[in-house]
Length: 392
Image (cartoon, rainbow, N blue to C red; front, side, top):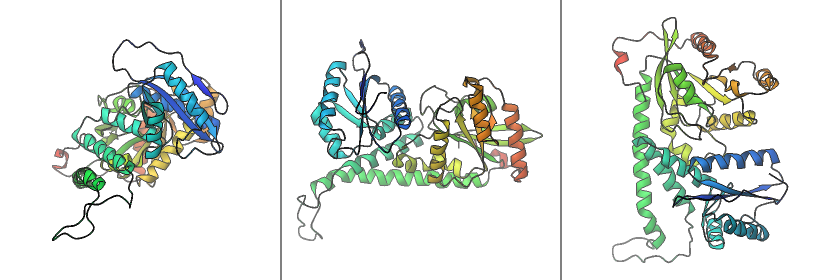
């Protein structure tokens, strides 16, 4: 990434397959935002685009005092984007910033190709990755709420006049068009609330302590679940590989067992609609006896990722749950001083490599000690172990 108002173009890629999405990334940062933070955000957007199946053919950035209300970018930079779209044959522009409905419409008209923002890209990824009926309902709810929020509402819109036996001024054509979406939103909310209520009743009767894996996306939570419990969870070196909760029984030794749960990862600017929609899934964190906060120790901005995790835990009412920091991927840390600095900053953290299996015995010992100190182990009552705990 180069200086202010910069355009960084990659070499055009020849695509032989029809229907391949060629994405041009656009980012506008303000002078109040650090350059390192902006670079990390655009690199993350590139990984999100790759996860969605798009080929990134270029990156354009602009640094301004504040974004332009109508187009986000300035008119000169808009010309650069138009030229870049023609040169790279891009068929979609992905903007790292959140766009208003007006900005999306104006950019669509100016560029002549599809324009989406970071939130819509994340929603598309979730829609592709959702496999269970619950996660599909959660994603559909988030998408519908996003669409409804993007539709402009004007008090001056013409209304159908009330007739005999009708009250009020009537409904606008826009309201009539949105009515099916709003009915579907209400239906999905009722469905997910029922799932949430059923899960809470089930978890109250669980005979084992619950330990939940949380952390930034792609920190290695699913790999850790597999390494500790042979769960067979899907693992991929892409963002948001896991959307559904997977729970397995973990033996800690000394006759002690816990439930270990993995769930969706966090990311900066995670859409609020997604957090609300995935409330029934994320409750596994807020209702846990202990959180294992998994962090990628090899990432250059791991401390920023931990800040995002803490902010998300506050949003899902899980900030007060006891936690243990797990520094994963220590085998990928090239500089030993980096790991020493992290362990000095976080002296209570446990350093492991889930991929290679190193440090797992120490992690289990710490889990056992922490849960015993808190008095979390309760002798199961007869017949209690017959409940369907797995993947709950």
